[in-house]
Length: 290
Image (tube, rainbow, N blue to C red; front, side):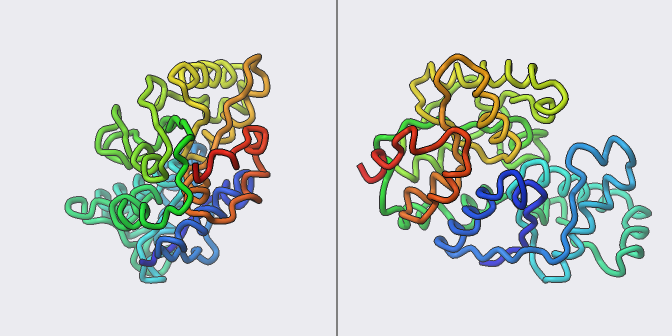
């Protein structure tokens, strides 16, 4: 199975360990991710506040480049996924904008049909669950995390807005729990799993992000969770960094691909060493294969 891979800015920078483990796990289950040559920033949470045209053009360019590869586009960041899907909707609904951008780029920009295949853009979570399948993932697990108690954290953009997100029910997301269960770990349903972590307020208003992270980690800890698992680069960054300002002992935070990699017996040690809340402080190696 092959996809054109749009890593986005974070996977080449602040959370490059996430990008590395996305590829490692993908290879292990038969998913080939071909990075889009000369990809550009999708605009994240900035472009749409400046220019409607730029908001569509930036992600549309990556869709255009993926189309030249003859492949659908895979993302690993919920913000990149959202911006790309919003661009697809604009291109489907606004013929004038589509003609302008295709003339600018010199070719057709592929989009979903709005019905059976709503979007060309797919998040890695969707691909793993809906195309690779849990059976193949579970068959690859060699070191089940049977004594590991984990809470899946979705944040805002993975499940919302409902018509763009990766979840069938934005208020009761379940994809992370399915993958956690596949690793053999124990998971918990909890109240704050899709509450905001502060997002980019971590830069402009860090005190607000710290307060939100404190509520999230306190609720996860109250359920009995020993760690958090995310599928969002920004959520991971806030949870991994903002706990340093709290009085409680921090909960380790993992990218979901790291959890899968550990259960599959893959080499994710270099990835874990990039965390501020270190896995070895949690003695993670004692919880693998038990």
